[in-house]
Amino acid sequence: MGPLDRTKAMHHRGNGHRLAMRGDVGGAIREYKKALELDPSDFACAGALGEAYSGLGDWGNAVAYLKKSIALNPSHPRARGDLCMALLRMGELDDAEKEAHAALELSPYYWMPNFVLAILCELGGKYAEAAEWFHRSAHSTTDTPGADQWPRFKERSIVCDATLWPATSRVE
Image (tube, rainbow, N blue to C red; front, side, top):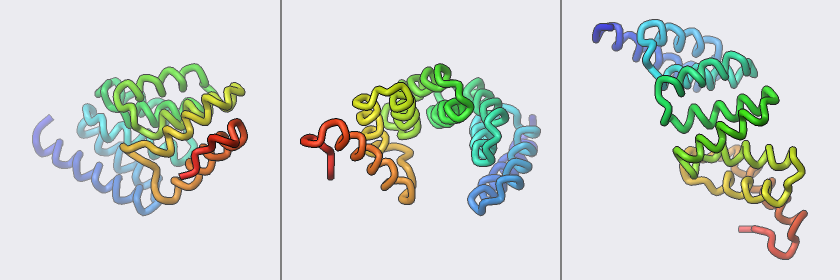
């Protein structure tokens, strides 16, 4: 691949990001695919494509592109975090847990794998452990949820705490 192809690929990836931010997920997917055709080694673009498919609820394609991103860059915590969420949505609970732990090994404060582990504990009836994972998710320092998501995570952590240990609830 020459420098011109890489420049074109970066242009398409940038267009994909702009379209995704405007809510045009279909347009973003088209641009990301063009970028990957020009630069198949672009792990960030493969991850963005996986995120875009996640936004559509197309978990099969999401998982495929997130796995491609991880194959290109195994130390990409965001792709691993997004993959664990997509696997959870598909009902692949064991694989979701494995990927969540792999993501946390790379970035212990990334909110998504903490959140996935909280959901998995909650589904398994491990409420005390779920409360701790929800708390970690709500208080993560890297790739934290947007302002619109924060109250939901914090509330869930507090509800788990208050239900299990009313005297020691974390209300900050």
